[in-house]
Amino acid sequence: MDDQPRTPWPALARGRYLRSAWPWRAAGYLAGSALTGIPVLLTLVLLAGAGAVLGPVLVGLPLLALLCLVGVPTGAVERRRLRLVDRTPARTPHRTPHRTPTEPGLMAWARLRYREQATWRELAYAVLHGLLLWWVDLAAVAVLLGLPLLLLTTPLQLALAADGEVKVIKLWLVTSYPAAFACAAAGAVLLPALLHPLGALAGARAALTRALLAPRERELQGLLAEVTRSRARLVHAFEAERRRIERDLHDGAQQRLVALTMILGLARLDAPPGPLADRLATAHDEAGKVLAELRELIHGIHPQVLSDYGLTGALADVAERSAVPVDADLSTALPRLPESVEAAVYFGVCEALANVGKHSGAARAALTARHTGTALRVDVTDDGRGGADPAAGSGLTGLADRIAVLDGTLTITSPPGGPTVLSLEIPCPVTGSPTTCP
Image (cartoon, rainbow, N blue to C red):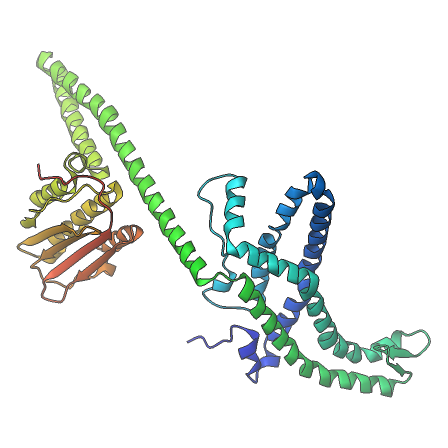
């Protein structure tokens, strides 16, 4: 188990704090605050000033609207800076709380940002950071780190002084090397002592940043829902492209091959016996094989029976063509479902029955399919030897991934000696009336 501290606070409780990278991470985080604080302060002052001055003539209104979005880039930069002192593996504090617009364009992006609570939390952080926080961070680094470093370098300062004296931190006048080395010794004692409050301040500063900029639980759920919807859109787009390819092959290349096969067949009948007739016969046979292969390819892309008769007829067709006898319980007609769901279930059952024929040694199999009103459940059972392992390269891993894209689940129960039960369950709405077997 990885027991490394993720933030400065747990690191401070360990005896190895000074020997770790945490003191320098904390110093870098606090010192780097000025690199973002100064630009944020200037931007806030310029936009607010120009917007207030030009507001009466309406020119300043867009500037004031832009002022409200200053926190968005500020939050993005600060979440990245947070990684210096927050090494959470899940990186949840560093994730953006913003959703992706469903429509393209700047206006759609702006409308969404103005409606999100995260935008206003980021604006509050930007104002706080620009007006106060970076000053406090820089002052803390100057006192807690700069003071001992100045004391440590007293002998060097004395050696470089032209008049042979140096005023340490504007308080003590040092004119001899013994006094200079005494100051350096004091700095050597102060440095490790002051690195502890420096780390504590960096931890507090990071906690404030997380509180304002890290996504809330509801926002994380929204982002997860958006990812799920995006994944579903990709699946639907993929299925639509499959259908387009299937139609192009069916209506284009297949029809041309059918015409070519007929022409070669007629030419074969008209040709006199001899080498030409033999070559025409060979070409006719090859064209027939190519046509059969193309039909199999089209069937693999999107089976016509699925389009014509729906999932009920397609599953019945799969059961009839199975190498192992299948008892198909499809007495209750399934409604028309989204194309992506029907295709995933169809190819899933094809894969399952193919595995039954290749690996299980079963004498019979059973297929049941039911729609509960909110979800589709399909079970494939066989009386084989059992012991099915999805990790053994049987195609079940890819099937599980395809079902998961649709927010479904694949469950396999296969004890040694059998029986093996493969269950698919996909939540899906009804899109049409029930279909029957052909």
